[in-house]
Length: 167
Ligand SMILES: [Fe+2]
Image (cartoon, rainbow, N blue to C red; front, side, top):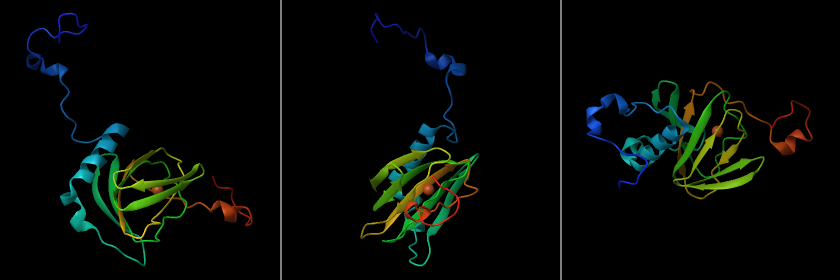
């Protein structure tokens, strides 16, 4: 820092511990949840041995919980999909750990390769599917923890079938 800087620290910053924020034990902001997901994605020893693939039903495992959030591990064999759904009151961070997932929303289709992240707010509707030829693994952080996952009628069916309008 040169002497023309607007910000200068006089003395030793370590002498003013009340100005230093201790690192938080638990994430609390969107950026921190996304950061937690990235650090888990980078450390395969945290989750790789837990993954199972189940062709008959969706496989999921609650990896950890904390105050106000839950972390889930999901596997997707080729062809498996969630169906259109939202996440109730929860916000979330979806991170692809392995393979490739396709996310469909009203706005279009997005291909999510390993490392891709999607952050979504309450009410966000999407359909996630493994359209690839290889299995996929994803990490889902929900805050608050997921209490419901309402399913939505696919658009093409809602035009012909009576029932509640979904968006
Ligand atoms: Fe979802």
